[in-house]
Image (cartoon, rainbow, N blue to C red):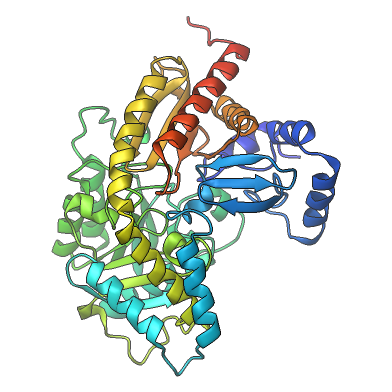
Length: 462
């Protein structure tokens, strides 16, 4: 059993955790014996780890924006691990997969295939600037590893600058540049040469900028580049999935600093690209082009695991190195799913819809916030949205216990989302969501906040 301090520490992560009293209470109230037996069997055979096993529930269906559990309850899914930009089980993706499986189900290394070539060409055409070289991997963490290796080869340097609280994957190299304690602590020596700087998060800003932000956090990145002198790359999430959305000029300042010091810029858009923010790629909001861009999550249509690294032509310098060499690097079925996904985003105008409905939902959540003393703020970009839960708006002190209670109250009402960094209700619906479904979610959030606030003791003031 975790102590209260240990639970509080691991809550400061990108997802909700599975060792709290509230989790156990929800399971005891909501889960019937048939589901419980499956959960116990799952826990028997899978290695236990924070953020996943033991699991919360058992699913038997997923379609569009909805999940169905083993007992037939339906949940509007505003979580989805950010793979469901086009919703679950899109018929066009399923049809593309079936056609490809019947024609060419696998492509061994040494060979290529039409779907892989077509997907590489399509991504290079879509990517901003001169990003026109691609490698595929089965998952985002692998693509991050390739980016780190390529940066070392291309620059002859071995050091990286990344950010505290960041997440780039769970492998040893990815957690070395990542900044979340739940992944890093207690696993022994990490990749050498990994420097960390404060993220552009106003509530945690060590420079005390507050509302009068002067981008001191960006200047600090350049300070580290200058003092170290031999940094291969800055690697960061363009926006964090928490969500944390940097000021408009932040990335322009980082891009200029990298250029001045001969440092590459790697942007991790694994969960947030492909239209979620109202643009195909998040960096388009900031008017900059990185040296490498990493995609994943929804690229496989919410069915196949697939990620991509897109790099500048000038970085095509590792012809005698094995950067990835993944068995499923050019999997034709995964590539067919990705091509269908890109077609759906275009043909159904989902990126435009994300921008339009994201603005509508932002306004709706701001209205909900006016009704609740525990809402410290609403943040968002497109259909990446977050509600910060606080003990007291006057102090801004966060309220992890209350945020978790709100999440389980919403689950009882049929809305699924995750709590990030301990106190942010993070909402990432599929881009196929309707205005009616968004309104349903807003009403559930309103009711859940009302319920939990009524049962909570207001903070005392001196």
